Image (cartoon, rainbow, N blue to C red; front, side, top):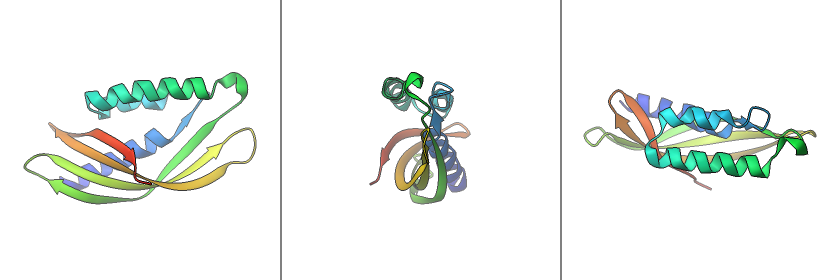
Length: 125
């Protein structure tokens, strides 16, 4: 139930925020199975944007995202929907020193059989 939704949101947000141009942003592909069709389309576009923005020829670029505190905003067992906000710590690395920032991501999840799928995602700040 609720715990499953929070865990799914946390895992999704962490994986989404952790990428590198060395491995071709494959983490974004892996999220497809944890997302609805709408979000899958967004992931494909987002990955293409990152590939254009951070070509490997211009040097290493990577981010490590860590979920700090997922908070359940709303939960409807009957409808099988949940809203979760995940506070993230983002450590962005280039060839120079990493920069660390904090941001919060809002996710909407829908229940699909036994699994929770991310249906919508945005930065809260």
